Length: 253
Image (cartoon, rainbow, N blue to C red; front, top):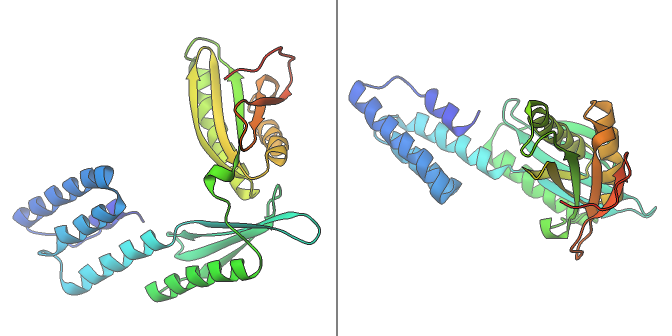
């Protein structure tokens, strides 16, 4: 349940109190957009200070603290066979469990669900997870140390037709899921124009990512025969074409 959902699950207030809370809650949304999550959390709690009893307020603080502390953490390492492994965790708010996902980069790994009921337990779990990963030789890979992969599709018109817009959304949706569950990386965004759709991905292994992306596009019927896939390693300025079903002379974004 997100923070805005929490607001709607508070007890019914008087009309004057409700107006005050709604105004403060609305202002908190704006503040979140301008000043970030920390300011937003403080503002939401303040909005209820005069209208919610102490137990309700503490419960709200606990839920906000819980959702803010348990972000996704990802770790990698190279084992003694030269294989790159991954291990990550995140919090499933609906189930109130921590998900631990681990395996070999480029392959869908195994998952475990660990129930988390108390704030202290949640906080300790994340700290222990990071500590255990580091002790086992795992390390974090900063975003600026990821390689880039771009998946490009020619558009039917300058800015794309209805089919192109559908493809934009679906390719991002399926690639985000596919790359994540195979420990490879994430989708970083897109651009459209000049009769081209470019979808950008940040990955830890560009060669495996190209192969995995081709599999995903083929499996979900996402115009693999029209796709062009190019990569850019750390430190490189230009993308290098790695796949195109149709031969092209030059690759440009």
